[in-house]
Amino acid sequence: MVEPLLLACISINLWGSLLSSSQVQEMSFLKDIFIDNEAHFMVLIVQSSSTFSELFGYTACRQLLQMFISIIFFHVSEYILALVFHGKSNVSFKSLLISKHYALAMICSLIEYLIEIYFFPGLKEYWWISNFGLAMVVLGEIIRKLAIVTAGQAFTHLIKVYHEENHQLVTNGIYRFVRHPGYCGFFIWSVGTQIMLCNPISTAAFTVVVWKFFSGRIPYEEFFLKQFFGSDYEDYMRKVPSGIPLVR
Image (cartoon, rainbow, N blue to C red; front, side, top):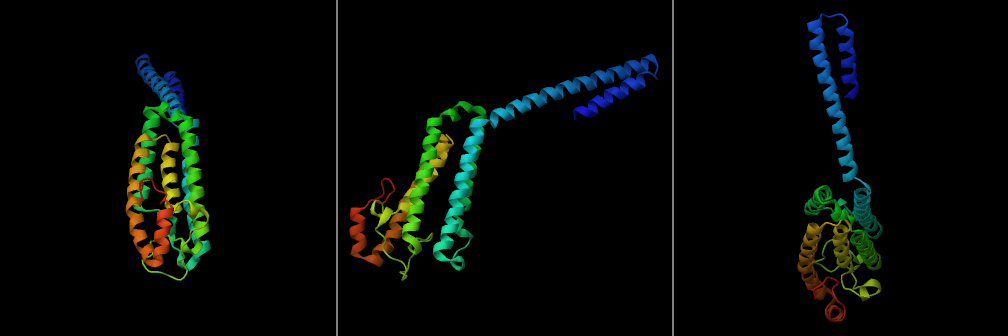
């Protein structure tokens, strides 16, 4: 944009040597307009560059990069582990665990982040909060992956309503401490992603929505587990917490 304006000014100077005085004045007026437009354009470029650098400075780049890496690693590793334990013929892209509601929630959290870092950039500078969220993401990932590896073929993304031969009651490893480490890990991970971004609204929303989902899913799943394993599972329930706060 700047080069055409300069070329226009040079052309006006060349034409000025061939025109009458009145025409020269008109051409001079046009030259002033071009110069003013060029100055305004340069100011806009500087202001835009300043705003862009503030919006996507070190804080935003680091926090958003951590977020994208966390999401990609979580879903790709889920798919790979599903392939390892269940085989390619029994695995679909649903094993990536990306639903419409999940995608919408993540998009909303990114929108909140961009709005807040533009209008309230200081809100994102609480690095002890962001780092605590990052630690939650790592912890949640470890807990969930330990659950998958420990359970092996017994771990599925869908609730089993019929007992299968390879579906055994797993009470060793991470399952000694929580009955549903997969749910526990995802709960910690999902809330941690929002704390990592210093998103107060999404942190509250994710906490409530994910907790509500698991508070309904766990009793439903355990209804079938008690049918499959009888008193063994009931004893296990009494001794080991669910892994989700306030869900017995």
